[in-house]
Image: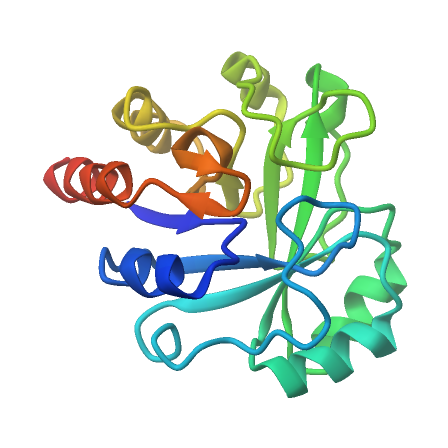
Length: 205
């Protein structure tokens, strides 16, 4: 099972987490987030070649995302705002792989979705918060998902429920599990030991 650690920020922590070999590592370029990396952040060499870096955005202009991808060194983007289909297609035409995040509270949230993104990411809806809630949504809602696009599962994932989440891939097209706040010491700083344990759990099953 592929997996992603999102909300990375501290350089030493990034290097240690990269040693656990997650397939993806997310870096947040959204000023409102406590995990915001800052405009001058560049993907560290310890990540490149070991894991795929993902730039995470909320309602940022397409041109700005493209420029930043070239400067910071990522080719995957994750969108948590109200991005329209034409914006998603523009990013794809620029050579970027697009993950569109969907906040989930009920069945309607996963129905009738566009085919434009390369992947979806399903996270827990909690007010206006865009990701990092630490809360799990009702996974039975996934039965209403019919778009067929592979997706990343997020929302309250931890070492305690990693195996249960992975088992869902027998029923749904889960591309990867996405871990964030439940494996943190504080916002932007991951518990390296828990990350290693997650890596072992996913490797064994």
